[in-house]
Length: 287
Ligand SMILES: N[C@@H](CCC(=O)N[C@@H](CS)C(=O)NCC(=O)O)C(=O)O
Image 1 (tube, rainbow, N blue to C red):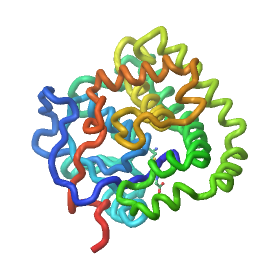
Image 2 (cartoon, helix red, strand yellow; image 1 turned 90 degrees about the horizontal axis):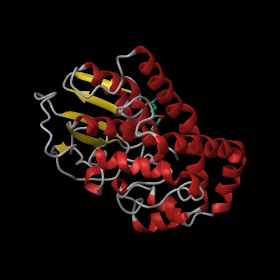
Image 3 (cartoon, helix red, strand yellow; image 1 turned 135 degrees about the vertical axis):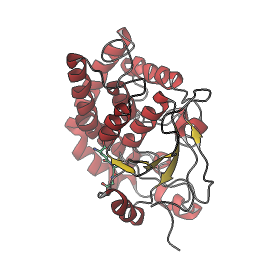
Image 4 (cartoon, rainbow, N blue to C red; image 1 turned 120 degrees about the vertical axis):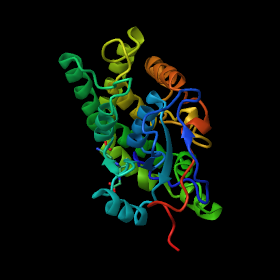
């Protein structure tokens, strides 16, 4: 559930998306970057934030869970999103993509050169991608199991209305009993960690050093699933995990996340949903 594999659009155009309007994106000028994604995956959000921080244009290819992942395997040698394609280069994994983008040598570097700062950033990124991600997945699972509206909102947009209603109305008790079992300890640890993060960002704009880094993006990307930002689009925007999204001690954390999104130009649904390439990728429905 935390990955929320949601192919959202069908039959859309093949056009470019300007991650930061007005920014002259000259990097990768010869080829259009392509991001293979599930829209509501935190790891894909991490890459979208990275691209936005650099003002890079790109198109997205919504990967259809299952069949589309077979195609993705053919392209990248593995079946998970995100995958970034830059001409002949195909890079899988949000961390590897971050290293690749930094390696292109254009500002801003999100992995610091200074060894101490670099160590802090990479440790925090790893924590966000593993421990925090696991806690977020559990919390979202529990929330969705108890909330038919959230469950329905996480379904693919193309889901037919009757099926959407059926799944939204699926007995929550069946799912929530599982959710309670797996989340009892994890939920408390998640709350504690989020409170610590809230304290950190209440007193400093960035998690490490005095500029934006991959640590900020990795943490913000996981927060996406706890309280969906406007860029998640309707009907998810404004929804979240009850008890987390609205917890008073966590308000500074989500306020920090929202400021970060504003600074990256990701404040509207359009900013969160770049156009989907048509007829070119693993997301294509079968003929
Ligand atoms: N370590 C990877 C994690 C990627 C990942 O977990 N992707 C999930 C979506 S959130 C996925 O593709 N799941 C489908 C599958 O495993 O079959 C990264 O940072 O990119």
